Image 1: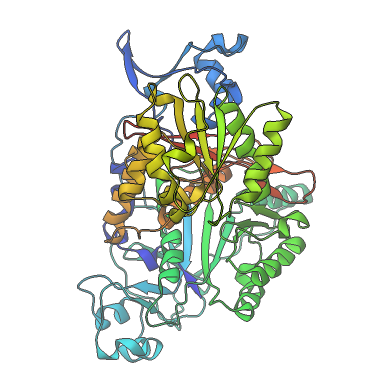
Image 2: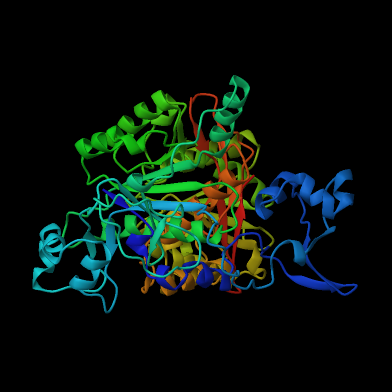
Amino acid sequence: MKLSFKYFRKAAQSSLMAMIAVIPLTTNALDLPIKNINGAQYYFREVKPKETIYGLCRELGMSKDEIVRHNPSVGDGLKAGMTLYFPVSEYGKEEKKAPAPAPKAEQPKVIATADVHLVEKGETIYGISRHYGISEEELIAANPQIAAGLKTGILLNIPSANTSATAAVAQTVPAPVATPVPQEQTTPAPQEPERRNGIFISDSSTAAPEESEPEDADAEEATEEDAEADSPVKIAVILPFMLGNDTPDKQTQLYTEFFKGMLLAADSLKNNKTEIIIDAYDSANSIDTVRNIISRPEFAGTDIIIVPDNDQQLSMLASYADTTSATILNIFAVKNTDYVKNSRIMQANIPHSQMYQQAVKSFIEEFDGYTPVILSSEEGKHDKEEFINLLKYNLNRAGKNFEIINYNGYLKSSDLAPLKGEGNRYVFVPVSGSVSEFNHIISALKNYRESSADFNSIRLFGYPEWITFRGDALENLHTMNATVYSRFFNDESETRSKRISEKYTSVYGSPMMAAVPVQGILGFDTGFFLLSAIDNDIEILDGNTFHNGIQSGFHFVKQDDAAGKVNDLLYFVNFRPSGLVDKRVLQ
């Protein structure tokens, strides 16, 4: 079963495009301060010690050539203290106005197929059934739960009034509602697709007549080449939307939210050059359903498949991709290792072993001059023992000293007495990322920091689980100037995060669910990465494509021991005592 913009069409009738354009969602605008120079505005960024041009490219989301173009001195090498400038006019700081209505002849650029409807406030069974050209009885038969009444926000399965019709959402302004064309009608329809409340309807029974054959073989070859060049890029999203359930559970809602975020990304790229089709299919948590999906004629030619978090279904789709040269994007199955043997798979989550290696390497660089102090509970959890062992091994190889403090139950100030104290700098690393062990150590660490003459000499290093902390636990992270490593992080106070959250609520009528990661933003980051890369003819598998999103980033590379590609992007998140949060891409 397919979903679409119509499935999430809250703003389609009043021009979703115009609404999106008011608050720019593109990542073109740099998250940097601005200063006026000779009457023009420029973003500026001071180069920090030990920074590299590669790291800046990843942070700013631009190529080395682009940085050098605006800052020629960088061509001679990057130096700490130099200031880089980027013209605001080129990177989209100004708020953009909604585009003028497009001419009727303009064709849709990003589309998605549909036979599902999201009920909006004020809609009726009669109105919905008439809109789709079906009877009220047919609509109720397909959705028995509405026999007792229609509720805002539920999803309806729409039985097709014309099995040859394909619904598509066009990114243009809405046109007047047209009367559905009966299946038996023989009068040719206009070449422009019929449009109903912002939905284009293309029907094979009213297709334009075939063109005559070219006069010679050369012309025929050129025609075929042109057709291939103009063929759209097809993206299939196969996730358990569970449309057969009357009441969706939380996990189902999160998958739906991910797809909604993807659609917002599509809308934000409204000036794209490439036609991109986004089809979404309900896997229904069933291997048989997935098998049926990939056997459908309309699924043929799919270029990119976003797969569900199910190893069996993922393997089936990966095998399919092997025979069709499609690309599998695995966003959700974090521990799946099929990418090792299958060259068509892009693993979006950096594997644990590689994540630990990257985090340890960056830890040693970040805390040069600090003595690591490993906090080990005698009877508590040791769930980060693999990381700790790797850290100790690399510290020994680098010739760096470290301390081990063993404690029982709660860490006490007396447990820290063996440390030399004044004049020494320490970064504390617990052997567990659990909130319970964090609570067992934090009081003594805060007291130790407060007793130090230099607060900056006492730091705390921790784990991805800590980014979920709220309230007192989060405040304690800031107090300790803590740094954690993580595959993702959403700073809710950051401008881009606020914009997408506000736009999501505006378009869909309710805020994104509280989850880590935030699924709507994950969908937006994923969609923006894919669609912008496709539209700019960038090979997403070549390892040169980098996207630092709102919450997640993407940089796929080939590993020596794997056939597929792995996203190696990892963040260091620093919770500063001032209350600010710094998110830095690791190099």
